[in-house]
Image 1 (tube, rainbow, N blue to C red):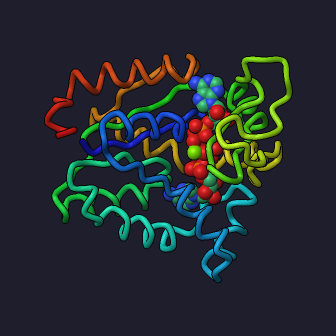
Image 2 (cartoon, rainbow, N blue to C red; image 1 turned 45 degrees about the vertical axis):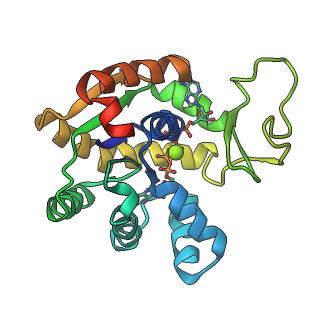
Length: 224
Ligand code: AP5
Ligand code: MG
């Protein structure tokens, strides 16, 4: 079960990739999360990556490819994986195809989350991330009128992601249109794409994805 979850910034890729990973018991490989970890460590690689991330530009291919390659070759990917945030341009897509061909793990399905720009801006500006457990929340998804100021799961401090400000969000959307859209067009031509309405509730979106994947793959075979 080798999957890619696709969609513009804020489409819900991370939210759904976690659910898919837990339900189908496959590792969730998020290049954004891996890069943010590297930035936190403050290495020279991290400092370099941070300059691109904070502006909403793509981190140079050679840096991202290096961390992706190391991760995808790990043993836990043998039964499958879900990629979130990679490939982001045609060069990365070509690299991924040749790498997966070499390790005999071709991409089987690409899940494309469809969400409007208006909804994306609302979600990104309303996102809060727990500084402790790293869970994502949204001020617009809160069930009560109370302002959420600490993590409902672990009590940790809620932070705004460095690239969730209107200027950077606009650039992230431009980068998506110019560099990332050609990648999904490539997968459409190959007939790999499952289109999902990303504007339902997170649970509703997951139900649609799960139903389609269970039709395609034999869950028992994957999980055991
Ligand atoms: P990355 O971390 O990949 O960010 P992104 O693509 O901009 O997407 P987000 O993580 O912001 O959104 P998401 O689609 O995961 O949505 P989420 O589930 O969080 O990349 C960040 C940066 O790293 C890039 O700009 C680049 O610099 C660099 N980078 C990463 N990969 C790279 C690569 N391959 N090459 C080069 N550079 C790379 O949801 C968003 C919010 O909405 C949350 O608050 C959530 O709670 C809420 N939400 C989720 N689903 C729903 C729903 N159904 N209804 C209502 N709210 C929802
Ligand atoms: Mg994400």
